[in-house]
Amino acid sequence: MRSGKLVTWIDRYIFRQLTLALVAVTGGLTALIWLTQSLRFVELVVNRGLSMTVFVRLTSLLIPSFVAVILPITTYVVIQFVYQRLNGDRELTVIRAAGVSPIGMARPALVLALLAMACGYILNLWVVPTTLASFRQYQWDIRNRMAAFLLQEGVFTPISDNLTVYVRSRDADGTLRGILVEDDRDKTARATILAETGRLNEGENGPRALLFNGSRQELDHKTGRLNMLTFDQNELDLGEKATDNGVRPPDMSEAPVQELLDPRFAHDQDRGKWVAEGHKRLSGPLSTLSFALIALVAVVSGAFRRHGGVVRSLVAVAVVVGLLAFGLAINNLAARNNDLVPLMWLQAVLPGLVCLWLLVVPDWLAQRSYAGRIVA
Image 1 (cartoon, one colour):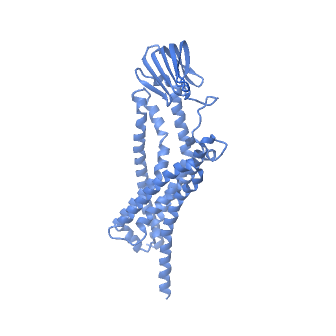
Image 2 (cartoon, one colour; image 1 turned 90 degrees about the horizontal axis):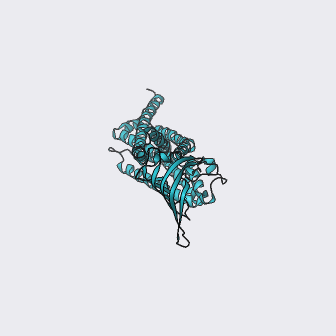
């Protein structure tokens, strides 16, 4: 077998193992995260009567965001594991004896890392913002358009973060009895509303409750005085706050990168968060390549040991964990102070450049030294 064909066969052999392992590990870990996160929405099915179709559709929209977060980690884990196993089975020793350099042995992993990085950019720039926008819109529709569906007898139902409704009982014709509403949407005038009966109607911007024979109690925060108003009939909007045209206000997680970095979007108080989120999406996938290079330095560089470089592997794990922790801290700090944004790029790029130097330069120097001895 010619050397060129041998190298091609080795590349395909290693690349196939890496690809299968990456798909399996990423898929399994994504399923586990989806299962744990979807438990938050099980109550909608068990206690509030939503269909299983709604549950699956709602939670499946979160899957791309899970993949985008874990892909750099699973890429590192797979490369580290597969190459460590090849080293333990002496396969890397045979490959090196065939004249393949460390960078040549790392080539399949680098190709996989580049493909994973490209997938990360596709997810971060297009897929995740789209699916999160659909998720939040669907969730908003459930809360605002299906409030009557969510209300359960004898249960304090959180319609939103600032609105809770209690209904003692519900008649067959839809009449609600024994109604209590805790309305904290206006922080300066938090209200508690009691009503004997009521009905839910569909409004222009969401459900509205028509209440009969009740009272509205508000605490004046300036004077500490309790104000109470009794009514025969009152109408209360149960929908979340929306824009003037009734459209749900956007969140930065669903905004495209060009809007995140454009000062015309977002409020002044959120400007720093939007900018940091934009740079996070652009720099984050680069860590996939950096983590892959860290794993490769641990398993293919330096002298080969009979039982593998356990110490180097442990050091690589510690470095990756440290970079993940540092990245979380920098992301939070950069959201408060955009002057720290360059550190986000440094955290994503610098480890990869250092590891690439460790892979290429020592081997290049060794080849030059060997060639010099032959000439001499």
